[in-house]
Length: 141
Image 1 (cartoon, helix red, strand yellow):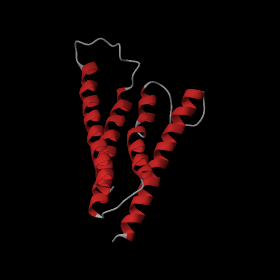
Image 2 (cartoon, rainbow, N blue to C red; image 1 turned 135 degrees about the vertical axis):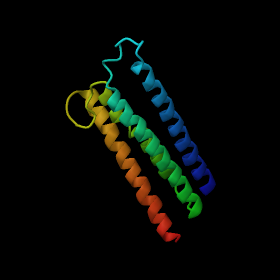
Image 3 (cartoon, rainbow, N blue to C red; image 1 turned 30 degrees about the vertical axis):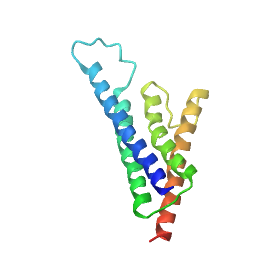
């Protein structure tokens, strides 16, 4: 089980870094001089924040996979999936914000509340997964 958990986290982290790299490449297209201003409704600063967040969270998932291997942990599969969910969903509030939805405030309409709830749940998922993994690592020290 530790090897499978580590594989899931390492693969997911690598996929997040690849995904973020593709977003970084796609962000260059609207910045070219020959492009029209059709993307002016999208705030690229917030897309850039999501791009960096996916890279950092991909590295976080890889670190969690390494922790599982080095400390020979056998975390429950739901902990692994909390980490994966958090690693992928946590940057989404920046994406919502790029399109004019403030996902950092739990107010407004249904879409804004859903976006804020998603951000909160993803943060809670990451913190919960890290607490369990580090507790298990201390027990195996």
